[in-house]
Image (cartoon, helix red, strand yellow):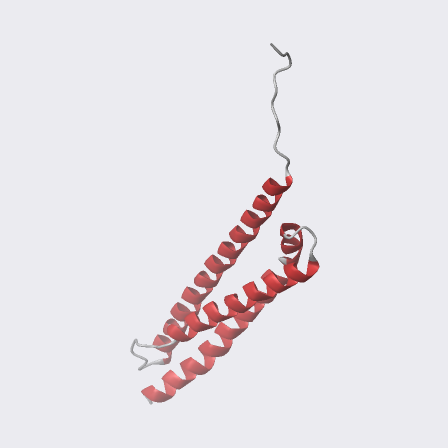
Length: 131
């Protein structure tokens, strides 16, 4: 009976983890195209390619982590324990996804700031008078 509950736990956890990963990724990378275009000064091909690479890496990291933490190791002798285990797994994974989302946003904003800095011409400060 315990094996059946563990299998039920996996059958619930995996689709939820995959759905959360897909949802966060689609939301993040649909909206990040604007930042990529700004970072790469309107060069659409390189902006889209870089965005797609970030998206692929996001999938690999998050799905890999979801699979890594998948093991339900607490006692599943009751459905209450199973639900608590799932809450802990899904909650922990959701927090991890949130951190990854904000980390990606940080990199996008940092890239945008660096692009703006490289656009701004250096100001040559000369004295108003010459000796």
